Length: 304
Image (tube, one colour):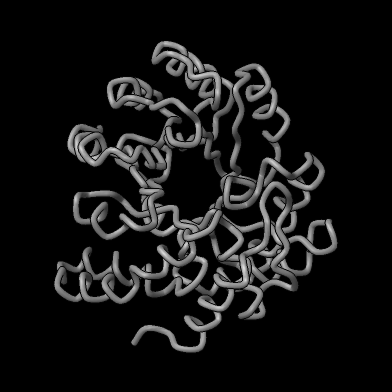
């Protein structure tokens, strides 16, 4: 689904993307489970993977672990013969450090970056514009901006984003602005070829009906084909069946996000044999006994 946009050498980035969990076992990167996960999702209707982002507990990974995670993932994809883009999640509040991170990862086998707005420092819109301009200058790879003000403390306005969208390698947005009017207006006003992917799992269906190009969804680690089918039905013009499918599926994000992610996702994947351990790293803690029981019930009795 990486169709070249007319007048651009950057691929469009629509479809269903996974912010891949990072498997751990006994405090270390679980390379066996990484390989198993990548091989599994290569067989699913997934259009791209994002490594070491929030769901991937990227803030708890050291540089060597992140590089190893990317290397293993790219190796498995290469051996499969399938073309599946890998993006690397980056975040931080020091523009200089992020520019160095872009330089340090320039030769890694990744196709682009997902970069969150600076957190905690709450820069102005001018600061946000200059920050992402400097990052765009620091790489030739495409950048997806991640706007999630309820985590970072700052909202990237549509006005600023549309100015940034004029940059050739600022290719799109993961939208978690939590403002339905802002999201709708961006979808209305964005330039051709600029991708908008919702990151709000619970709003996946409504975002698609308003014109979003897909989603970056932690919940789609499970029942992946069902998430993909909702979008495919809408593309085919089958809105009634898309809605019916979503009504069956909509309880999954609510369940998995009832406690801090990715604990619930990891438990589900562990129960399904895709992870050797549901381990998370502090400050994340494992899913509670109550949540694990509900997940186990959902696995045993999937929605019809």
